[in-house]
Amino acid sequence: MNIPDIAQVRQHLIAKPGEPFSLAARPTRDPDLFADKEDAKTSLKKDAAVINELKDMLYAHKKQSVLVVLQGMDTAGKSGTIRNVFADTTPLGMEVKAFKAPSKNELARDYLWRVHNAVPKKGNVGIFDRSHYEDVLVVKVRGFASPEDVERRYEQINAFEKHMTENGVVIVKCMLNVGYEEQGVRLAERLVEPHKLWKFNPADLDDRKDWAKFMSAYEAAVERCSTPHAPWYVVPADSRTRRNAMIARLVRGALEDLNLEWPNPGFNPEDFDIG
Image (cartoon, rainbow, N blue to C red; front, side):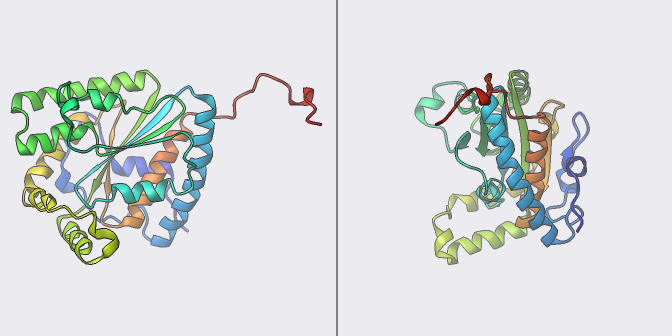
């Protein structure tokens, strides 16, 4: 069995802060970390169990929180990642937010308002299915904001994430890097498999036509917003099994870094007689 340690996974996937980044140089199918899919499945199963226990410790302390940001093109596997990485996790202390097109109420405020409201409270693990990065991705590609506004947003996002980390939020940002051909296969599956048909959105094909523009926008977002306090991890997503195993390693690592223990209840259990 060959399961990479957490440090290896981080080193392999990180977009190093302050360095040039090329998305084209990152493979969408990469067996280097998990050459054997069975090893990936074993690693995921073990990590999912540990994540559950550490999440409970986090909830018991209520001093910090963990935010997992999942960003990627349609079919990259955001919901699949959540389902598998947190397969053993009890709902208590979990928050999941899927970001869709902003409502009129949200549009009447600054673009980070709805995001800040969704940041997990202390003791919880939060998951963003898409995120504030939509405002430098789809907004940029579709021209919903001026180039000048988009340009300012990179530093605003960095400042926002720094504010979060300085106030007890650990951020794990994962770009699910799916390939153009693999996306085509998965979109076709949605049209023929009844349990996936509901996911198909004709508008996804418009985004697919602008693939090059989206890849350019992702490249800029990763390079500009991979920081020491909230680095980006670019996860090859053509293999669902390996994708899940890699992200589970990252999430487990973030929780282990907190050096959690069960809190002292403040009383001696021997003083009580249940009867």
